[in-house]
Length: 411
Image (cartoon, rainbow, N blue to C red; front, top):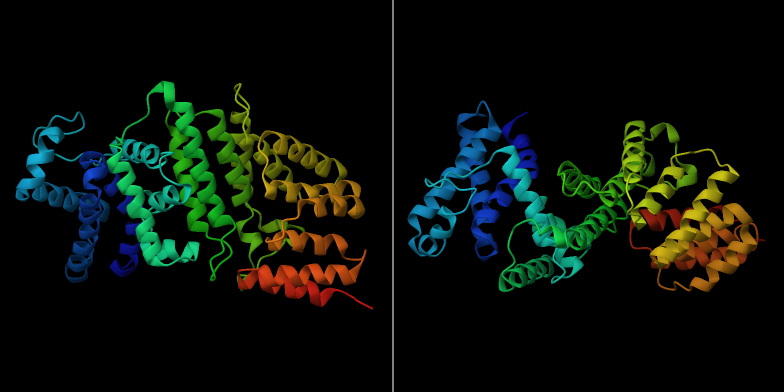
């Protein structure tokens, strides 16, 4: 791989590791310095590798340069040193020579501790996700703005406010004490769940699926699994859910980026390894007394990995949705339950339940009503698909609705 291809790849995988380790050392008061050192490391790589060629071990080269830049900063910035160096030199993960530990274990620990620090209820869920994407996943401001369909200025302000809140609250980059772990883990899992969904139901004007968001959420979930104190049933259930959903990535979007609905997907494109992985983590999630909404959603996702349209499949999905709405109600879960109800009891019963929801600003609501009314009352179905078309945000969704309207036979 040439340097112009390798550097963007390494930026994605290594920037967040270097930043997490340095942030852990410097604290939120100096988080921008950690980001600047990490960014400057890659700038140096771009300049040097373009002239001298790739080093034998590019990752080790990056780590070495990052360490030297951090040490040089500490040596040459007296103000920073006078305020921070004393505490750094006494920190357990720092040697007296201010050697910076970029071992795999310290990187993993730093990223997990940073994850808990970022997922602090003091900042909004939007701030948590934006900060996680920036610090832990290495996404640029432009990428985040593009994903959320907001301006770069808005993202910058959102991240700045989140950092300031953490800084002013003197939030430490460390594991929460055991007495607070469950409560704090709930927020972490919610953030990873939202991050995965941002990718799975992307409203980006270029794509309806951001695999990179989903894969980063799964990577962070794996880190929680690998740590004994956070390898808990709810974490396993969430990773099972992500695995089942990710197994249909290749079948969900066609070559032109158009969304393929579940019923029309080619199951030969489903990833059997991810389905097996999902079963593995769902089995591990069942070993314990904890029962979360992720268990129920993973169960629903599991039944969707069975392509055969059997009554027992939809009865189980409907039962799981019923339990989910009792445990953790959400309008989208209620909407999805309506589809399962249709598969179990037919369109008339589902139409009655769907019309009670009144999700009047949601294109998926009208798309489902259009589906339910198709061949029952095609004029009403067309009206609903047309409303869904008007509310759709992505070209792929608009194209899907136009196809539905075109397929309707209205006499």
